[in-house]
Image (cartoon, rainbow, N blue to C red; front, side):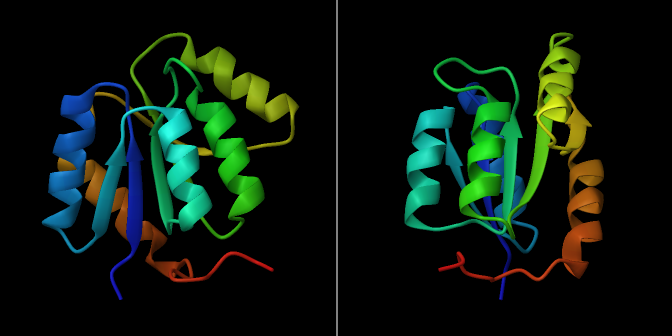
Length: 130
């Protein structure tokens, strides 16, 4: 079974490019262009992996990640960002007791695929707990 990935970035070209790369490399990827849309998708089905930008309008990636962690504890969460303000967001999450994986932008496809391959030890395909 191919791991499912939800890619979230307010820059549509980044979302669309990452979804295409992941679908061509053994994943079932879909995209969302903001945190609110992603949160709605997660309510329907927990992805195996959430790959989300941190700095976004409407709902930032940290808020999204915390919500997904609560609703879908088995989902692996990888944050991405190229903005300096990201350190503040990550520190805010740490003070709330959350640690997330992080990849800086620009993302090299080989690095992304290698990082995600390291997660094959995760038990993909788990369903949301009752």
